[in-house]
Image (cartoon, rainbow, N blue to C red; front, side):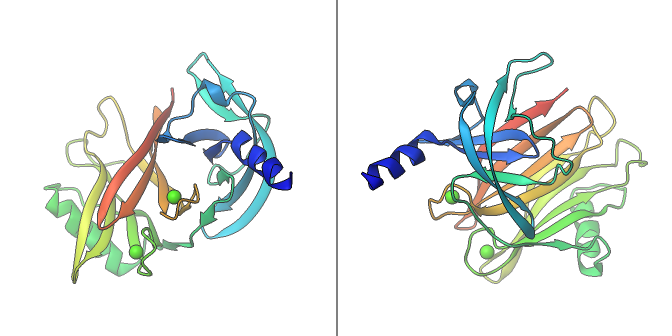
Length: 239
Ligand SMILES: [Ca+2]
Ligand SMILES: [Ca+2]
């Protein structure tokens, strides 16, 4: 009896990933996907996390809104003052994330070298940086938001999110996002990392970040495994 009751609860509750109050991913039997209408009115027990600290739990309800301006799936009635909060339902295992100072000379140099490798004249810096063990092998990888100042001319400015990881004895830089058409229809872009961990309890870690400009936000849920990055789910919201 007790076991079947516990199973009924775990089946009834969807596994969702929430940034601020926006539901950005749902895990189904077929894998991760963008949230859909079916989540409307479903109850979830969320665990919240802010990169390197604060785990809080709360019970909430999901609301689907068809718009206008555009359809959205969000947590009903919560006003999170801090958009940096990541919440996941079920039993997520969050992994520690350490911020890298934009003033760190080693990383500043990496940013400059990256800009050169992309053939850009404007000198970029570290807009934000994060260290975390993305694949759970005990070694930390670095996720860097490398960007030029918004004042530079549109032809030379850019924003990128890159992953630095070891491959054998070499450090490899993998570009996850790059926008260099700053100042035309979109931009300037910014990147933010929200969290790392095994969100769905399948033994493999995921990580989540946003790439955004004043017009909208792309949220991407990814996996780094066996030296390769795989996109699990992309959800866009905004104007
Ligand atoms: Ca690692
Ligand atoms: Ca997982």
